[in-house]
Image (cartoon, rainbow, N blue to C red):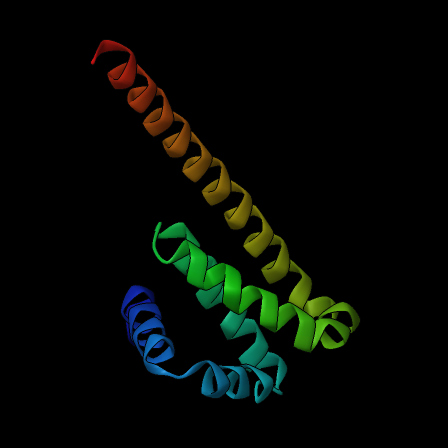
Length: 113
């Protein structure tokens, strides 16, 4: 069995190589609940790895707008969606903290220089 991190890296390298139209088509072609669940897991894993925050946000936006009706209708996807939401909240908070730290450092450097 492949290690999940390797699978996620392979997926994101593939996704980054696609044009926006091709990536949109790939997201729209996710039709089975297994594929939707794997996509949700890939997004969660990428957020947990602290990589590609902006790309995950863009993918999540398209994914949720395209598949919202299926995601809402299928209880078996809700745990994955909750996990994705929690990972997104944690990573957003982490990035806000880093930006705040950088802004504080910049302010200090400006005031001493």
